[in-house]
Length: 362
Image (cartoon, rainbow, N blue to C red; front, side, top):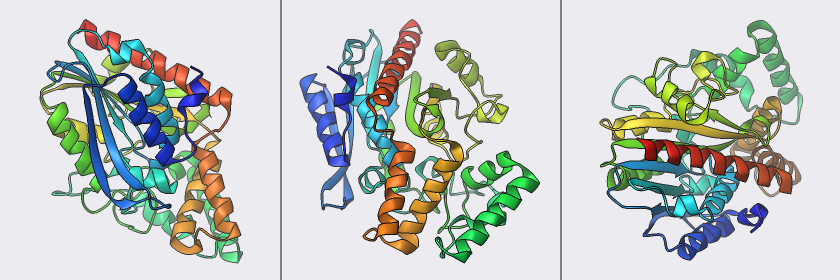
C-alpha cells in the first residue's frame, strides 16, 4: 500500500483511518477518550489508544500524535502506516507498542497547535503546585507578537520592533523567548496554562492505566514544523546531563540532537510531555525523543503561528484574511506532497524499528 494513502484531509478522516487500521490488525486494545467539545463541522472528537503486544510487557514503546493539534496530519498518517508494519503489530517478546492518536483532538480538528484552553500542550506539564518556570524574555516581546492591527500600521510597527529585537539580541534569543514556554500571558503564544488541560489529564490516565507497570519506556512524540523539509530530526527533550540522552543516541544514532546543547532546531522548552512522563512513571527507565519533521523555514512557521493566533483572537474564520492565514498555518505544519509523505513514513518506520530493537535487547 502506498504511504500516501495513510494520510487524511481532515481530523475526522484521520480518526477513521486510524481506527480502521487498528481493526484490520486486530489490536488487542482499542480505547476511546471522548472530548467534551466538537469540531468545526460538529463532529465528535476523541483521543484513541491502541495497543499491540501484552498488557503486562516490561518494555513499552509509546508513540504519540497531535500533541500540537494540527501536527496530527503528519503524526496520524505515520501511526496508520506503522500499523501496516509487521514488527509493530507483532512486537518482539516482552515489548508492547502503545499508539496514542490525537492527544489534542480539538487543535487537530480546528487546525491549531493549541488546545481548546489556548494552551500549548508541550508546555502544560509543569508542576502547577509550585513555582512555574520563568521566561522573562517573553514579556519583552509580548506586545509585538500578535498585534490587533495585523494588516495595518500596527502590524508594520510590530514587525519593525521584532526585527530590532533580533538585531540587538540575536535570532536564537528571539526563538527562545517566543517558543520556550511562558506562564504569564494567557492570551499569548506558547502559553503553558494555569492548570492541567483535558489533554494532559487524558495522557496521565493512559500512562497510569497502560504504562505504569513498565520497567523500560521508549517515547516517540511525532511533531512537524522545524528543520529541513521532510527530514525527521530526533530531538532529545531533556537536559544535556540527563543519562537518557546517551541512551537515545545509542538507540537512534549520533544525529539525536539536544536543545540544551544548542544542537537542535528547537529552543529549550519547559513543561514538556517528557516532564509529565517522568512524573507519572518515576520508577521506569525512559528513553524519549520528539521526532520533528521539517516543513517550511523557521521564520515562516513562526509567522504562521502568530497569524493563526490573530485569526482566533481578533480576525474570525470566515473572511478572506482569516481564510488565507488558516491556509498558511496548515502549510506550515503539513506539506501535502507525495514525496514529503513518503519521506516521513520511511523515517518513522526506521526510527520505530530501532526503538523496538533496543527495547527487545534490554
